Image (cartoon, rainbow, N blue to C red; front, side):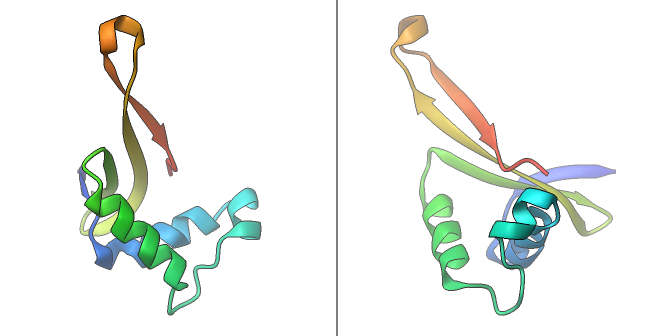
Length: 89
């Protein structure tokens, strides 16, 4: 059964590997270990921001997917908040 949870720092190598595992990501990501400090810094910034959720999909203890939801305030719809989803794998 696939479950979703907030990503942890220990998930970062799996997340970066997934981002690198497609034609676009292969040219811009580097999943080699140790990971570049920029990935760690970005993870820490995302994790500390209450308007960000970096999640992983887990199946049998293995990370099999990821997504990032950014929660944004807007003026339309009487000031409704909305979620923008990206980095879906």
